[in-house]
Length: 203
Image (tube, rainbow, N blue to C red):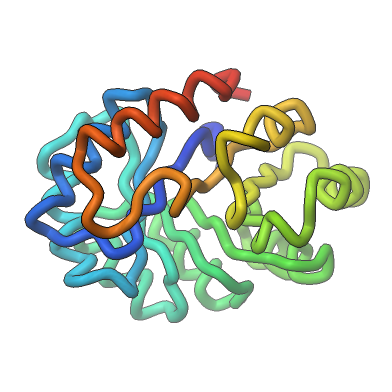
């Protein structure tokens, strides 16, 4: 399975179904490639359904904080096309791959990254990115199979996004630097535009 570049992923933790479509539209219009609704948000599967139904069809919608194979199946049924986890579980990766979805398992060490790849992932979420750092990502890239997508999440913001891009990140997940519960679509749109201006596009 070959994934598209992960690009910029908006992590909408805490978003509600009532606001999900407008918030997602704001980040998509600014140039984000995907949105992720974490499971520890209010009624996350309904938010995913609404965002997916609203489009656009060329943008990806995912579920985050996915911890079990059953979580994967429920997200797939809701229309998610990417599955993002804070940890590495081989059975979660395997179920994601079996359903033809993009798998972004979280890894904090190269050992976890290799477990994820052995289970079928083609990309790894570096989490927390602020702990691993750009130099850590470069070290990982020197030992992981060529073509492995490395996607930092956690601590990525306008102050360091360009540095991650220059170091070869395949994308980045951006949470509180982009969206916090209660933010208006206009506020999110402004932050999203600032971030996309720092990202070089598909890698």
